[in-house]
Image (cartoon, rainbow over all chains, first blue to last red; front, side):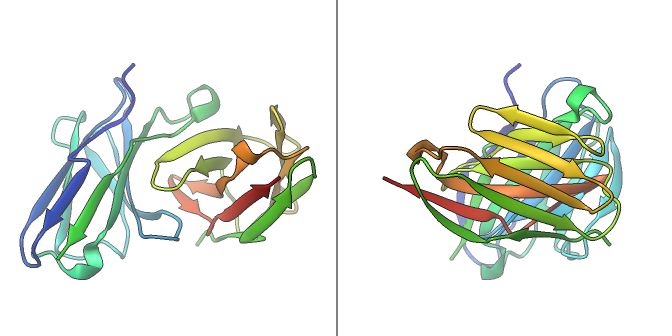
Length: 115
Length: 108
């Protein structure tokens, strides 16, 4: 069990560029979440998947954001035409719903800086 | 829509003292989590509370859940500096809804 893995850990990009983050959940975790956290704030929900199905998307997820989980394993979060307000830590988490204790495990996060 | 409110948002404690962080939530949550976050780091799961009256303890931290009052508490006993971090109360309706967090600072 290697935990939830996120890549890249840090990304600096120019405004207007596209960026993509990848998340590898814990093996056999069928639920996967994406959150965004800005400095001094709690994480804000973006979207979550049950296997390959995207079950819910936040209003925060504008049309510049898209997330996929094509085979129900890893997931990608793409941000198109980045803006300075997109600078944040993007957190991925995974779980087995209704499992014993049902702990939700978070990755180390991907820091995005838009300059 | 589930909303989670924590108080206090900032807490400065002396080592050895006890204190409680309160978490109120606005509507039914199918479970209640507490997470810890150190500066610049990700989130560490502390407790998952599943049912009314649930109480869990780990070291100097004890969490409880009252679903009728829609209240969870995180009690800190005999605080030590290593407990300094931000603590989040998190409700669940499929997705997770975080409170704003309580930034705890434990001073000698």
